[in-house]
Image (cartoon, rainbow, N blue to C red; front, side, top):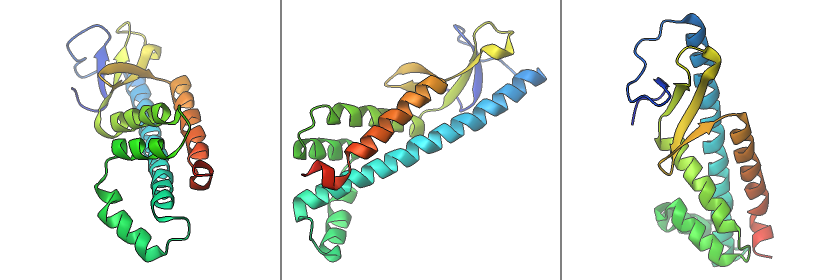
Length: 171
């Protein structure tokens, strides 16, 4: 694994040392800013998704009319100790949507990569600045992160945020 923001030459095992081309440096700075915004969006979306899941588990376990003291106790002594993966398993057992677990697990893998894996930039031909692309490992596979990929992630997340509203899941 390398450092976040490294530039590599596609297909090479060595990192590109001290790139001095101003255009490349500007492109790297712009992509670094962009991927930080993407990370923030993924992590924020996953946070709100986890909140929806927690509310569904609370509503199913304690009932919709449980008082705040019981909900707080349940959050602090149970949900705070349960991983996101396990929460997905629990909410999937509660609801009848067969695709929910697969979609939630996809978001979990993207979220984990964005939280724990470095991104790097690749030069596909070693000279052309426009060939600088952004990559991250998701499930040990290098994924080229571009606008189309991020748009797909955003659509997935938006759909899940809509589909995991607690009142909708338990009806």
